[in-house]
Length: 102
Length: 167
Image 1: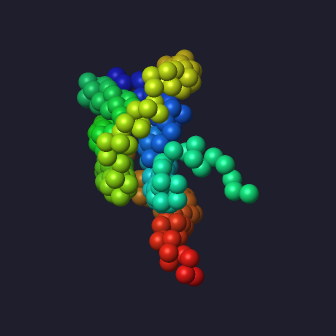
Image 2: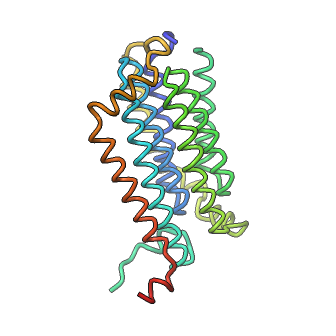
Image 3: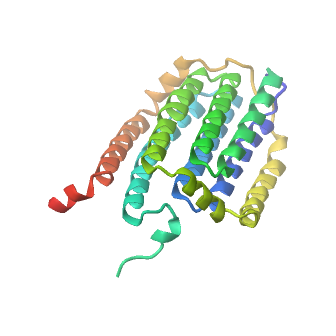
């Protein structure tokens, strides 16, 4: 394991985060945008665990648990909003919800 | 160990790339599950077995099941797939791909100077638990409140509209 540089492990997290960011920008469907946000959160968690492993501290894993909690709460509210939007606008296009009433 | 690390990394990256580019929601979700399991393998190789188990149970299990249920409720079907394809022409990828590549290039420029990773198995479950319920106790309480807020919020938003009108 000593042969894997921390840079490579962090680079994997960076690649995953960039992929999630690209997906988030390119998509118009709310479901896929939430999916991309999950990818980005997971990549951030991976970076935390890698850093914690590199310095032999448990803090990185604790932070990952917090990120996991945030992701779970975020996805619960996000999916409820998605169902609400599907009920109200009959589409998942984020452009349909871009204007305010009144 | 080292080969396993690079194989799991490649799997995670490829399956994530497929997950963000699929037009069928179920296919994208299944690729994302594969990606999350690859990341769990990475965690195991980094000597973090507790987090690897959490990744599979909470991320690949609970959160993805939530997504799958919502996809089933939405009932997108073939029409949704075609609409998704219409919304996503190849040239729509150019700008976001450039932004993502710029971010990645910066990271690749900054990261290589760092030292190698420590020995495996450096962290068992015990020190993580001690840290979590010692110095981070306030964070754990805040996380519990956040989950409660998320549950109440999801319940409030997910109510049936006719029930809402009656009140």
